[in-house]
Amino acid sequence: MWHDSYVLVVLVLAAFAVVGCVVWVSMGQGGAMAEFPPDVPPLELPDAAQVTAVDLVTVQFPVGLVGYHTGSVDETLQRAATAIRDRDTRIAVLEQKVAELMTDRLKSVYAPPAEPQEQKQEQEDAW
Image (tube, rainbow, N blue to C red):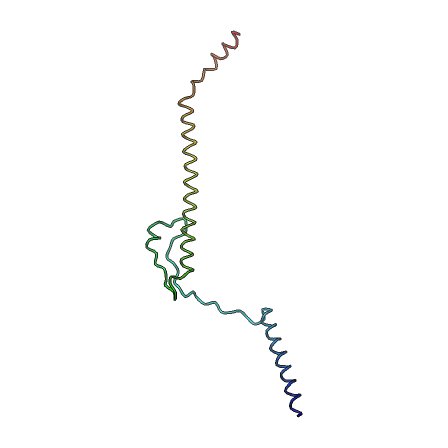
């Protein structure tokens, strides 16, 4: 009968030790996990600003357990979206500049010729 109380004390001490270790590790004192290299090779795509249609057609996605590697596909789609957005913005800016230049050209072609300053001055003096 004497051993029942000792077993309870040992179990309580073991529980405190486990809880203490969990708290110690959760506070960052247990060290850091090792960094492992990714399981898939990096995609061979240029920066988003230089992505071309040929790059997107020839890209080879790594195959995972249930299909293409999701991270690689997401990264490629993000680069393509960034490239398309940047090009659309550039096209809009250039179209705006062309419209402004055309407006200025039409104004200069269809504007009545300006009277020389001397003629205006003479007309004002005559009145």
